[in-house]
Length: 98
Image (cartoon, rainbow, N blue to C red; front, side, top):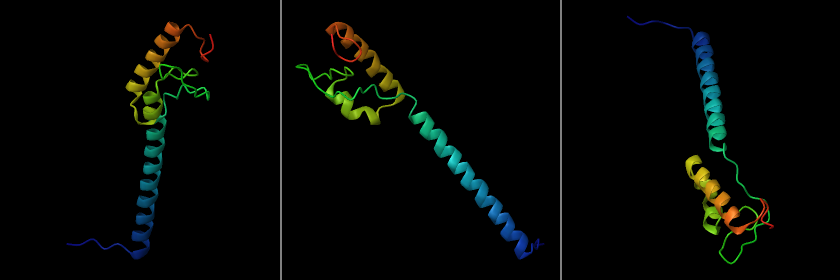
């Protein structure tokens, strides 16, 4: 036994399903974007490297700067911890000037 649905009802249901699907994708994309951007780059827009190839502005290595956007949040946190240690070891301020 088949259920018969009028064309108007079917079109309305398709429209509702597409709308809900679009909203779900938008919310999912927004949440992914928020999750991805939880740890911001420590860049200070100085981008000058010392003899150890460490930026005097943010204390990241050249490799850490180059790979920042591909790091997980856990890896970014590790980099930030390393930058704090480097800053202390070099006796500089947050902006790289002692």
